Length: 221
Image 1 (cartoon, rainbow, N blue to C red):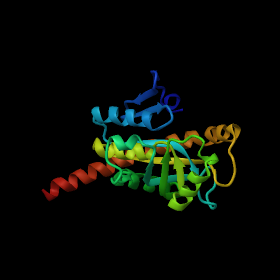
Image 2 (image 1 turned 90 degrees about the horizontal axis):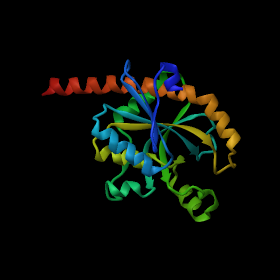
Image 3 (image 1 turned 30 degrees about the vertical axis):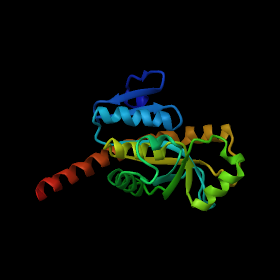
Image 4 (image 1 turned 120 degrees about the horizontal axis):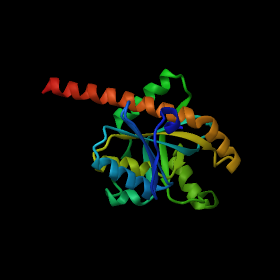
């Protein structure tokens, strides 16, 4: 959608697809699922000195009041995936960048879009729904969402000094009912254009906020 919208060429390798919009200086990277792939992307981004990054992904909502199709902004992630331990010891929290999160919140509020803010549990277990002990720990932790990348990108971003946040779309409610491939595909088709457009707007807002913050620092010095 991003490439078609802006008339861009898509470059594809073994791990991800990339398209760059030179007008707005925004690049989109579509990578494979899971924390190892997310870690690779964060590491690569840190070497080309990007201003800020935003992950657009799907998550399972863990509250009865949540509805499929609503947005979730994680401000922190439980490090249940393992990959993040290669950056910092387990006692270091995985937090989204504050400035990027502020940009997300401001853009969503501007569009009057229903969204939730809270803690997500990042796991590398694909079929955790069939693990009673895992589900028990998940409920006890009071996580509000579950996915497979956020802890890694937050910790990786902190380690690499990269401002990064996430805007997730609730694709299912796994503690209430099972999802189907058809329902996920339908949701993706319906919401993906909006999700990507919001991502672009959020990155532009994040750039503005980071510039303002830098100017304030210079004035104080």
